[in-house]
Amino acid sequence: MSTDHHAGLEEVKVMPSSITLIEGRSLYYRGIPIEELARQSNFEEVVYLLWYSRLPGVRELDRLKKELRENNQIPWEIQEMIHHLPRQAHPMAALRTLVSALALHDHEADILTYEANERKAIRILAKIPVLVTGFERHRKAKSIIEPRQDLSFAQNFLYMLWGEEPDEISARTLETALVLYAEHELNASTFNARIVTAALADMYAAITSALATLKGALHGGATQKAMEMLLDIGDPQAVPEWIDVRLARKERIMGFGHRVYKEGDPRVPILKAMAEKLCLQLGYEKAYETALAVEDYMLKKKNLRANVDFYGGLVFYALGFPTDMFTAVFAVARTAGWIAHIFEQYENNRLIRPRAEYIGPRNVKYVPITAR
Ligand SMILES: CC(C)(COP(=O)(O)OP(=O)(O)OC[C@H]1O[C@@H](n2cnc3c(N)ncnc32)[C@H](O)[C@@H]1OP(=O)(O)O)[C@@H](O)C(=O)NCCC(=O)NCCS
Image (cartoon, rainbow, N blue to C red; front, side):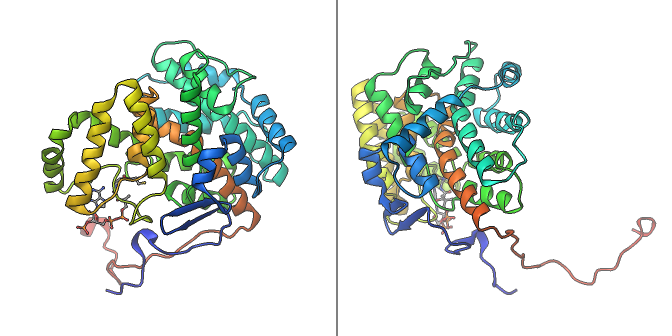
């Protein structure tokens, strides 16, 4: 059998892109190191940077914020729909369904001009947190809270979830997490969004399929699974046995390993520091210490390092999100990156249609059903 193929497309550069650079243990959005953005920037500014290739001026940023606020109301039919979704549905399945349904209420859904796409980008990003928090409120049998017009994107997210204005630390923590999760080159969901876009499907279709991909346990779903693991282990002392049993069964330990970063994920130190601060402040020492013990043990035992979802999950946990909502929070941030890639794809489009290496039988005779 020939091996002229690339299972998993690892290390294959399938297209040029000027959005994100990953180089060794460094990550840059439009050339700016992620550490600087996490420290100094905010989510709306990063959205502008990703979509328009440069940092905004004061007026440009104000305009983007205003447009996001003006577009954050969801149609009443979608509110109704949220009320009819099964409460036990997974938040990512609900979100995927709601984004797809949102397209039916957008008269420009099928118009693919740059201007229409720009307007849809704003509408989608503005509404995604409203859908995520709306479903969360619904499944807790609480009324849906409308977004406020005077709060930032991150503040509004927590406000719609909690029903009260978030404290400064929570809002800033979520803000930084949104910045870190906003974009990451050609990961599986982003690549999927580009494939859908390349076929000249619409932006809602691309985001819906990206959401479907992100839900997977090897991708964004790992955020939830990694936290469930920490809660299940429960104590640093229990780590070796818990891990050994799973490794012996050839199971994957969620939140570890990475297709691109073999020497460490640059987002991890930032998220880890945030997780430490929050966990110690809020009384989640046990969870944090268990995380440290798992990280230590996985490095020793398998030479595998924690990835973004390991400490990202712990940050979401300390912020008070239910574990099965983590991937949806990730999705809110990543929508910014998906849209940047959708713009880039439309700008210089080529249908994405690779080949498979055929390994099945050849020249097989058709046998009529009566003779089989
Ligand atoms: C992310 C991931 C899919 C990348 O994997 P990949 O590039 O395909 O790496 P490989 O599957 O080639 O793994 C190389 C080796 O490390 C092992 N490995 C990789 N990640 C592992 C993990 N999380 N737990 C246990 N073993 C792991 C593989 O089993 C393989 O071992 P082998 O050579 O003995 O077969 C993988 O690390 C994984 O499944 N991680 C858990 C899910 C996760 O956290 N996803 C979020 C990513 S940001």
